[in-house]
Length: 167
Image 1 (cartoon, helix red, strand yellow):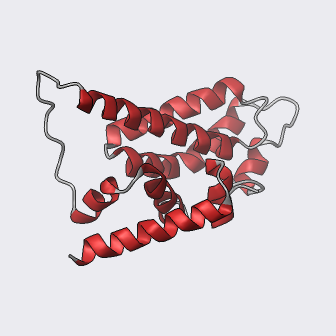
Image 2 (cartoon, rainbow, N blue to C red):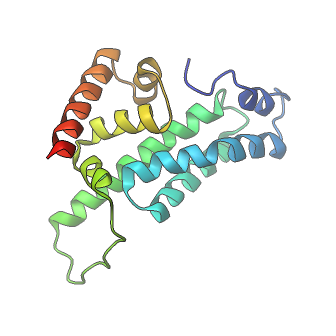
C-alpha cells in the first residue's frame, strides 16, 4: 500500500465512488499539494519549476480522476516522472552550450548543494524518505524498484551526505 492510500483524504475523494466531484478533487489537491511541491522542489532545485511540475501532475489527475483508484499515489508518480523529464532536459541543455547565460539562481545552502550532487536515484530515495516520510516499501512501490535497491540507494546516499557534510 502506498503512503496516502486509505487516509481520510483518499476516503473523502472516493466518497462518491461512481461519480467523483470537483469537491472530491479539491480535497485531494488541497491536502497533498504542499507535499508534492516539496518533493518536486527537492528534486529540481527551483520552486517555480517544482510548482509547474506539480500543476502538470494535478492536471493529469484531473483528466483521469474518475478512473484513478489512488489519487495521491497517482500524483506522486506523475511528479516523480515530470521531475525526471525536467532533469533530463537540463542535462541535455548543459551538453549544448547556450549563447545566452541563464540568470543566476538564488544562493543554495551547503546541504542543498550536496543533495543536488547525488545521483538521481539516491536523491529521490532521500527526498521520499526524509521529505515525505515514506517507508522503504512505499518508496520501492512508488519508484517501481526492488526493496533492496531502495535500501542500497538510501545507504549510499546517507554515506555520501555524511562524507560531504563533514568536510
